[in-house]
Length: 309
Image: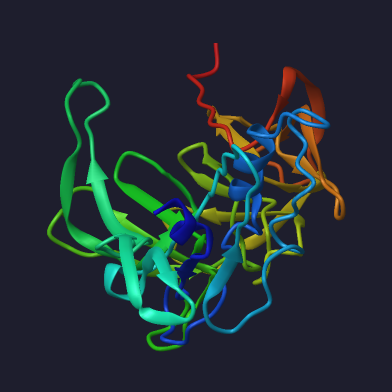
């Protein structure tokens, strides 16, 4: 049996999330998540630093993604697979290249869509599990931002369906829901000034801010700008000012007067994880100011705040 397995080829059939065309894997986050996994399991020659680049080392095929593995003596392989789309469009397993009908399916993909458009509801003052909102957002999205006040919530940007039948990409749209009407679906609020995903979002209850992020698909253009909207007035976002640099994967929080943006990746290429804390005065549009530093660099983190003391 061992001799047979040595001659088999591991194969991943990976379909892009919103299109029926078979292709090699593409990354919604530029490969960041998978690269981090590979770096973290690398022990030699530099711990935490893999020689594999998940973007440039991707197999440039248009059908199956295949790897042949041969060993001598006692060898151990670690194979990491990232799948997307639906179960009927994903297959991971083992088959004989000379006889493709001789195969074993090990597992398929998720049975439901990766991007969600459902809304969960919690009452902050009452510890309990979340309940499902009766209606949905206008489109599926992930890696977006949300802000609001006591009666209205906004959901902007992210990655998801651009238009029905047009595939997927970074989003520019903003949805809103009225919290007192759980039976009504989200409505279109307006648009951000640019496509954004992996950005910081917060509000003071009057204005919502959307800062930084990745602008296009593929994710190569970082944003420095800060957008703002008046939460009670559905309209396109306006330009508030700029961050200290071109930032992605940053976190945001605010009180009644000031918003802070912390950490993230800064720069255009290559980007560098940051420990900086920057702030803006929400009622006064303008560029951010350096407030201080976090205790360490942080990215893809969360933050929150209380009222001003």
